[in-house]
Length: 235
Ligand SMILES: [Zn+2]
Ligand SMILES: [Zn+2]
Image 1 (spheres, protein in one colour):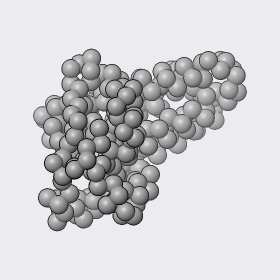
Image 2 (cartoon, helix red, strand yellow):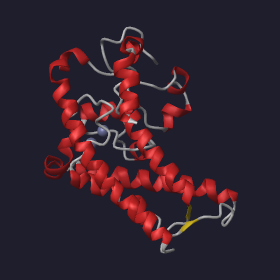
Image 3 (cartoon, protein in one colour):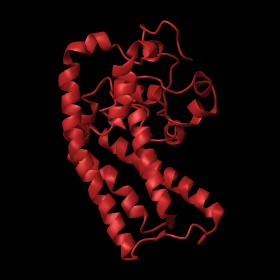
Image 4 (spheres, helix red, strand yellow):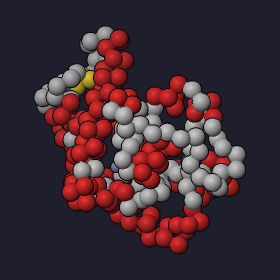
């Protein structure tokens, strides 16, 4: 995902995305290469750490020790949709509160600073975590599958959505259509603009998928445009 979006947005024709750029690239140009190198290094560790609980889920499911089920109709069609929403909400809730914990100054210095080395995120920032942060983020779905029934295909959907959202929100470009940014999507879901603000300000926008917790806890900040270089603001 990171390679694909990096190629599409940063390498192929960055000029066509110019008016959607969320950061002042020129200012950080000299440091960009070493920054991306570092992000890839941390991400490789994260991939290994995230793979372990996934392997654990598969093995436990084979033994029948989890609530993962194979027949999509076992709990009915309605439950399929509902279970996805429940998992997304619980994952988002867990992420919001662990993320706030990671911003306690002493914890931040030890475990979360790695992710925030990237003041201006790139597609490689999304999984650039300290190993302790990776473990914290990787364990929640493996815990939930022991408690809440979920169809096996939805476990794949969840892990894919987590990866897509993670990478998209760190692309450094506002990728969503203008109409989405003016409507329901931007109002409720987290966008690259929203998460870039988290990287800039540090004290707002802690969510993963939804703005729900940020709004409820009054940590939600959203502005119309981020950078002066943007000649034609997207929204
Ligand atoms: Zn953070
Ligand atoms: Zn981030």
